Image (cartoon, rainbow, N blue to C red; front, top):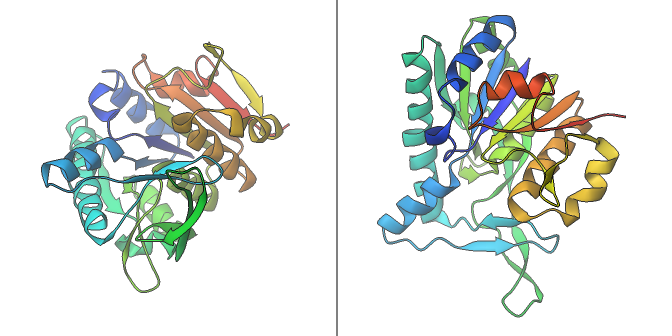
Length: 267
């Protein structure tokens, strides 16, 4: 079983062979898709006159600050436009898929963060209200497996539900890691728009879990989250995590065959 995370902005730029590649893999094993879409959310926020706000954690992770209004826009774009665009693309190619958010069947349950610690403009650590951001607690793996048993590919958007049934924004990469870990996927693949983890402009083709953890703080913002999610997935029992470029031919099968990208695995 493989869990594949695709960024919302990657969808438009996927290599023409990518969907056929998904189809081929789905014939042999269960495929779960989790998607992001931060850039699209930012675009719609601006169109609606809502200025997006980003914050940086003390450990250097940059993320969207989600107030109530942003949570509504996030839900609309993620569970609506992006999710259904991916499902339509799969259906058009003869792949039976169903679009879901983490709220449906409580697929992703999260605890609302009461406080966020950020580094403010003066470079000092500061506590702010947590807004509508969640820390993933539970994944309804039985429901996801029931979809796979029917030969359906679930396409999941990273909106979680809180105990109080609020919409919560959770990071797409980490949502994919938790889904992969809890469902028991043996592989998780992060499709992005670069060739893998780059160090000094060279792709790192292979990393152990320990080495990935050690390197993570020194990696730039976008890729750091993918490496963090990879290490979390491996800690939850996933065998291999891949980071690969969706703009190359057969991006999924070539990554799995260790032909391209970065693979992170246990010792």
